[in-house]
Length: 280
Image 1 (cartoon, rainbow, N blue to C red):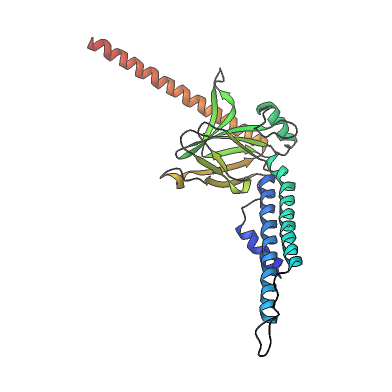
Image 2 (cartoon, one colour; image 1 turned 180 degrees about the horizontal axis):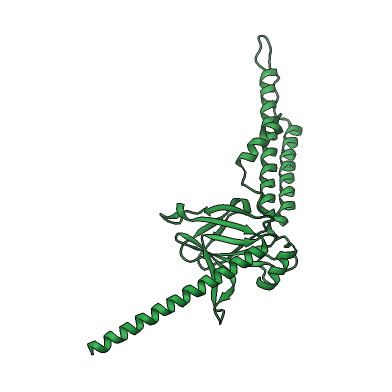
């Protein structure tokens, strides 16, 4: 009965999954550990209850006077070691699938080859092909900024970026380079993997790969100030072609905004110059 009781409860308290393979493997570790723990708990409590009932006090009965039991002590010590070994082996078997990024699909591989990054870095995770789409996640009080590969403008110096909502292509391995511009934050979208600390001056990395279109919600998981509760994170996965259209529109919008700002600066400068001439 223990597994039947434990399984629904385990699913209700473990992290969400379903968005990315690494999140699925993390959830499976939680479920395995919890079910294992429930089985042991109910087993121990059952034996304890049976022992209390079987050897309850009776009139005229005298309990055996026993001092220690070496075999029993060695047995439960080895049993505890065996249980820890099972949990450790299962965790380490799953760990590689959590840490090491999966390979992108066909369209995702092509997109990563054209617009992604190719690095040889011991800290930055890399899929088997070495091709991935890297997005820089910058934590700011109190909003997330996402910086994409590919510049804006003729010289391509200014980055393409978005705030609050990250748009990514499906079937593409996405590497996140997470950093903070002010205080310590924590980027967490439960269905896509574990929490990642955003630390000023230090880069942390994580990854995910979403197989089908969808929207995933999360937020900053580290108390970062009075606006912490409003620091939400949203990831929208769209087909590769739709992502490329969105990125082009985002670049175009930033170019137009930059052009308008340049005109405003020029106008302001010209007015300031005319006023200075009149005062002179």
